Image 1 (spheres, rainbow, N blue to C red):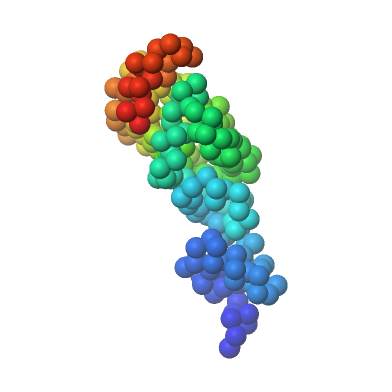
Image 2: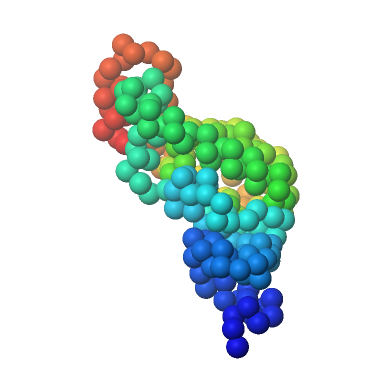
Length: 225
């Protein structure tokens, strides 16, 4: 029996063992496998190891998506986490190639995947509050939100969790330097039953205004990251 003679359930089971790129390669072999690749049931879980993967066409977004993970552990994360006014022209050029990728992708997710249950984002240095808030507003079933080393997130995200995150059971905002103790206290006060973590966030050096004369502070932050 050839693989194309298998029923859809068997084909999806085979696809489930493959990563995104292998699924895409297999789908190019014939129409039957291409249709299996496009079955929303195959895409309840998406994991990405760098923002550049978000630009590929080897996955499908649909309301069946339940779990999303974008965890970037590249050395370029350090460049993204430097304040914009402290970056060299070379560093700005690096960031310009991907600075809107995660935000734009989350905008798509919030519009097309309302049944999300889990979101894990790590090392997304250009991620901003507005797109996390949008996820919280539009994905009302969200149970888990874990944010780590996302330098541009602020207390606005924590406040949004207390307002829109009624379904959240787990919320982490670790190593995010612009989170304050006041924001942490707000979450603990208003969502005391939440499994909440804010490891090191309020202890880190927050962003400073654009004051190029404050070189000492800039040097300290470079060493920190």
